[in-house]
Image (tube, rainbow, N blue to C red; front, side):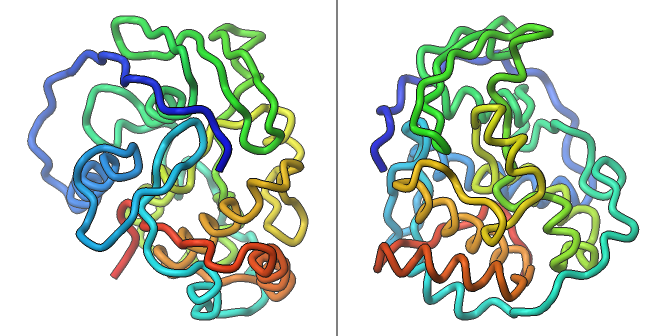
Length: 256
């Protein structure tokens, strides 16, 4: 995709951590292993390819997105009953790779260029080539300015809840909410416009990013055992018909 090259990683402070003692920490350990692959660092599985992603990041290609879409169950959305963002998917944001930085700041550092951080690795400023519009957006941390750059869940968490995540255990839902494949820094206006929409109701204005966008959604849904609604499936298929061979991607944790 035509996005700016990845800049050298900013130095980050590290905090001491207690040893993992729960099943959640096992999942988060898997997230840490694959985070290197999503960030374009060593650690790719043999036979997999690293392909450019937003902001110069890289995701691990694993097969064909259209083929993967064909494996997803197609059925209507379940009711939204019981959905609670914090209660079911954990508080935003966690330090999933145990590097001393929460997920929001990890994604900002991945997707923005020219970043400035404080000693606790919070991103204070940077420049985003917004994947949903193709336009440049300046990020400046502040009460009235931080909202200009937001972190989008490609598969919205409420959509995930209605398409199978309600049946996952909470540890898997927390992993889904913090999976770097399902997260992108985006311009706030596009993120607000999208809301919890799926591919049938919202696609990026930047048409050159639509293939990767739906491929990532498909990959996340496959990785966590979710299904697609009929209109969502058809919209994804239409997008992928414009880009034969579009790869699917590896999720950080997923489920067995």
